[in-house]
Image 1 (cartoon, rainbow, N blue to C red):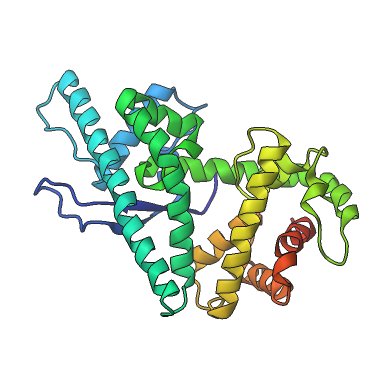
Image 2 (cartoon, rainbow, N blue to C red; image 1 turned 30 degrees about the vertical axis):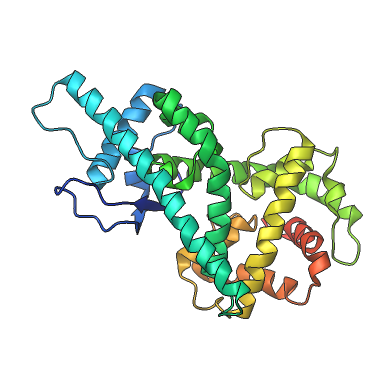
Length: 316
């Protein structure tokens, strides 16, 4: 079980007066290992139906979903849960639309020569782009077979927008990503050493990932989906490395390295393919500093290949 588990959950105000939640308030919920094992079991421990029910009860305890009245019978509770999930998905979809207006305003400000984009704004735009691409398929699924969404959260979490995932589901998704990264790291050394032979002047071309099985390993390290063929995997890797290039530049320009919270440092390292479970906070900050120092003077046209090389150079 992972010792550190942090979940960021989008919460939006219920129409009922029983729940006084600020609209579009972002709540950070921290789980210790005992809470996580209780509320977010793996699919191997319980059946899918029980897992979905636990996710719903967990969300009710957190106030994300409104619980059924105490005197409700089993059928009434089932209908109530379905209605509450429908409302939750609707609010999540609405939040993506509302957030789109904020993104448009940020881009308009930049075009008009206003204040430069911040790292927080850059990450918001990246999150919005990912959510928008998932929104239409998600809405179709919600309208046609809404009951499949909790199942998709178990077997195909990459299909769900970030605003439409329950806290327990999100905790489990993050755990699976980390477990996959740890498994990839244990298998990666020989494969990464082999592709590192293609390095030139501290850079490694994306083409080095083709046909070696290394694309699966790198996707696992970067917490990216591994399904599909190597062409699809290398596309995901390239897009993620482009995102890291922008994020690194923002961190360096804004000199945020020392001001980041422990959670933000851990998140940044995971996005860069580090396995952090056995690292102290001090070691995590040292790893991030090493990464930023290593990319600071890299030309933009070598940004992707430089970061891929650094990924193969990391210590386990």
